[in-house]
Amino acid sequence: MGDQKGNREGKPPFIFFGGKGGTGKTTCSAAYAARLAKEGRKTLLVSTDPAHSLSDIVGTALSDKILPIRENLWGIEIDAAKEAKRYIAEIQDKMLAIVSPAIVEEIKRQMEIAYLSPGSEEAATFDKFVELMDELGNPYEAIVFDTAPTGHTLRLLSLPEILGTWIESLIAKRRKSLELFKMAGRFEKDLMKRAMEDPVIESLTRRQKRFEKSRTYLTDPKSSAFFFVLNAERMPILETERAIELLEKFGIPIGGVVVNRVIPPEAGDFFAARLAAQEEYLQDIRRRFGAKKIVHLPLLRSDVQGMEQVDAVAALMGDIMGEIDEAE
Amino acid sequence: MWLEILKEKLSAVWEFFWWFLFGTFLEKRVAAIRKEAWDTNDNVMLLLFGDYLGLPNPISYYTLELLPYLAEEMLPWQRRIMNRQSVVAEKAAQYDFT
Image (cartoon, rainbow over all chains, first blue to last red; front, side, top):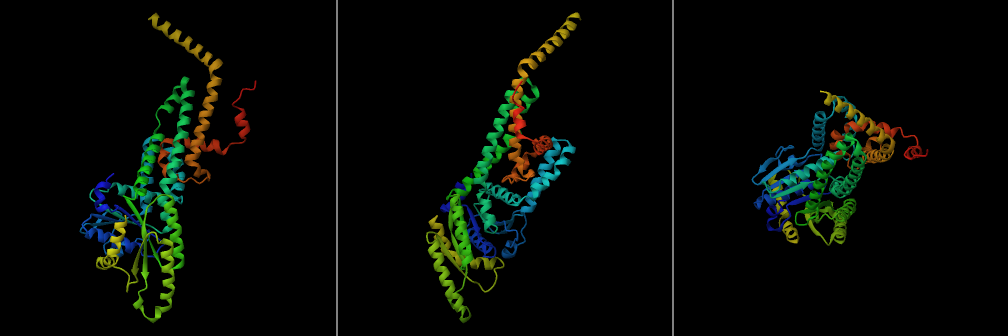
C-alpha cells in the first residue's frame, strides 16, 4: 500500500465526492483536485458519473484512459458498461481455452444474464476504483473520485463489506465439499484428482483478498474521506443524512458536507423569499451535520466551464477546504 | 516371456478380487460419502450461480470468473436441480433399508 507516499501533510490520498445528481459533485471534485494540483500534489481526477460531465467542466475531452489536464493534474472518465464488457470478454477467452466450444456456446446465455444483472456495472466501477487506488504513488499522490448519484454510490462502497462475508462462507462450503470428495475418492482416482487441484478456491481467495484491501483503503481515515455535496433544500438534506448514516455504519470516514448553490444576500428582491427559506435550511443543515465540516459555495452567474472557472471555484472553497484538511 | 504372461494373469485376478471386495464391503460406505460430496457441491453451485435459477446473488458479477472452471458441471447441475422431484426420496435413497 502506498499511503505513506500519498499521505503528505496528513491529507488522505483518496477523496470521494458524492450526493444527488445535479448538485455539483463534479464541479466540487474538479475544484478540489485543481487545488491539490496547485499545491504541487500529483492528482488524478476520476469520474464515475454515467452522464460524464467532467469533460465539459475541465474543458478537456477525457476518456477511459488517463489523460493529462494540466500540470500535476490528470483525468479519467470510467465507462462502467465498457469495463463490464471487457471483463466478460476476458472470461469468455479464458473459457475457450479451458472447455470445449460446445459448452461455451451453451453457457453464453448465462453470461448474458450476468452482464445484464443489476449489480454488474457497479461492480465493474468498483473494480476500476480499486485498480486506480493501487496506482497510488506512481505517480499520483492523491485521487479525487467524482462518484455517481447517491444510492448507487452507497451500494458501491458497501460492496466489500457485504461481499467479504459472502465469499468467506462460499470458500468454507467449497472446502467442505472438497474434503468429502477426498474421503470418497480414496478408492477412485477421478474423484481424488478433482479434490486435489481446485482453481475455484484459489480464485475466490484472490477476490477475498482484493475486497479486504479495498476495505482497508476505504475505512481508514488516514487514506479516505467522503464529502457530500448538497443544495440547501429539503429533499437533498434528508437524503444526505440517510447516506451519511449508511456510510458511517460501514465505517467509511466522512470528511464533511459541501452546501452548493447558496444564494448570496446580494441576489436582489426576486430571491428575497427564497433567501429566507434557504436560511431555514442552512440552519437545518447545521443542526443535522454540525459535528462535521460544513462548506458553503455560492450560486454562480453561470455553469462552471473550463479550468479558469474551476480555479475560481477552488479559490471560493479555498481556506474552507484547508479547514477540512486540518480536521482530518 | 511366460513370466510376463503370468504377471498379467495375476494382476487380472487381483483386479477381479479388488473390485469384488470393493463392491461387497466398501462401495456402500463410500457411496454415502460420495453422495454427500456431490450434494454439498451442488449447494456450492447454488450459492455461486443461483441467479440463473432466479435467486438473487449479490456477487453474480464476480462468480462469473469461476465459470471457466465450472462450465462443464453447469449443465448437469442445472438439470439435476431443476428435476428434483422429492427431497425425501432423495435423502432416503442414501440409507440402506434392506
